[in-house]
Image 1: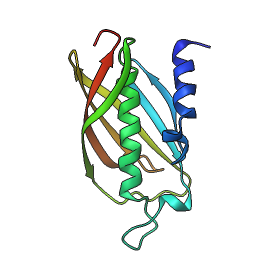
Image 2 (image 1 turned 180 degrees about the vertical axis):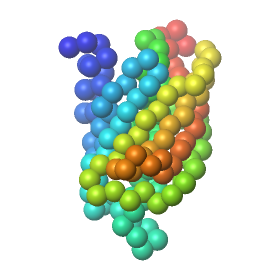
Image 3 (image 1 turned 180 degrees about the horizontal axis):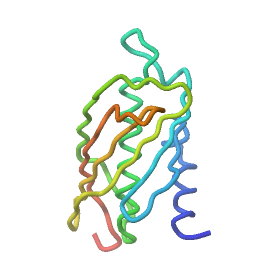
Image 4 (image 1 turned 120 degrees about the vertical axis):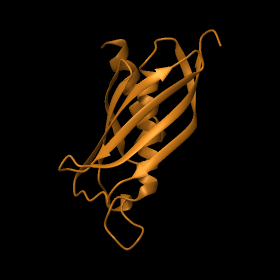
Length: 139
């Protein structure tokens, strides 16, 4: 098992990921992909069966966070500073929702990332940018 596979398994075992039912399927070199197997408790709001925007916000935080964590080997912790989400269309999905993210820039303490979540047809339904404060072995 590679170091990347080990931390991926550790992160997926955390309650933060298990509770909502999503999992990181890949994260390396500042890029990540997360999948959510849709359940009834992910739906709601506004009288539709669309995936709730709060679930998407939760997903984005984990998704961008995974991309950030995978961007540097010396990161030992991180916290979210900002998340800006744009809901572009209702996310209708019966089985699976996919999100991708990538780090766009970073300095010593702050890392900037962006991502998108797609429906089953591959339509981008929401986008997000985020800033993360990272903690390294030397900070």
